[in-house]
Length: 516
Image (tube, rainbow, N blue to C red; front, side, top):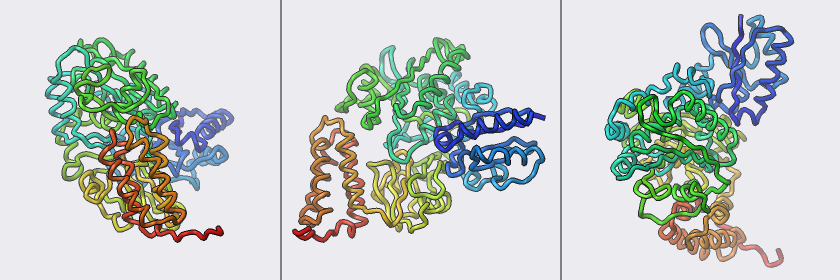
């Protein structure tokens, strides 16, 4: 009887020894003469349990973790005699962290072989594309609009409206660009999609092309994601050979070709117009708007720009209908959001939940609180330019509007957790320093404001004329917010001002003595 074993090839799993564990399993099986099939799946997103090894049984997959290479002989002993093992976690789907999620976008991740097209189709893949091929383009745009899908990159703009804008533009050449430059601290959902379910992202891009009239697409991936680049390139070739990419998508006579491009490590290229400049072979700097990319984008042509999670949400919307997707969530925030728990957190990983889950549920129920065991103090939402929250904000529902009312933002869905040892004045200084390093330098408020901001917070940290310098920081933040060309400078004030507002005691520095 063949034993089927799954070991993730996801970068997070590899970073903690998944390759060594997989090799040890194959070696041990060979030494024992076992008939064993090893499948390299994606991570389930339970990172504290990686390497997570799953074994197929007649009833379900059974999980073991974390399994180091040294644990493999004992694990094999248990498998051969069907005995108990201390690392056994029971059926994978029954693990509470996983069981209590609503996985729509991540429904296949960790289950299928990422580059097996037959496996993808067996688990619902291509159903949305097949439906889109028999619909009118405007009807596809309307379906996406009715679903309530909004941009998951942070701006939250309705995806269907953006598509319809491109659809309505004249001209034979239009583009779809996927912004996969996932540079925010504590975020990894885009990487997981590209490494573990690349066909889903490509299917979403093809549907976007059919709906908008675009015949070419580009995926812009950050250079720090080499495995995502190789997986996407391999997936493109598989779909080209199968006839789902090229001159006639699925034999429909409608063309869509896809290109994978690698960035060069610039955070600013996560801003859509900087990404377009980079794709055109130029230095990544922000473009002035108008015109918006939907009217004059890549190479001056109408362009749909969405991030990975937005496009990856499209196939299930087309396959199951707008109403199915819209039934998840609350208010104007419909569907699900893959939240990413990172930083000082006991159980870091990915949690896909319908909008409306509270921050407390994410951090305490799923994350288990701080890894250090010290009291929680704050979390930063939405990347390095996102706001900090305090403990009394933990019962806020995680949706676009509720967080905005609380002075925070959802961004890409990343939460970075800090315990009581964090110095919030230092974190405010870091926000300015980050902007200084990553600014494209095109506009003065961002380029100069970040430097002056870092210097001024430094004076506060040294106890120099604290009240006057805090007032100066307030003025500087107002200038950067209102005068910057893009969100790089415009959002830098958000972490600074939230730290000042919620944790003023950290900025109350006593002046140092001259002798010091």
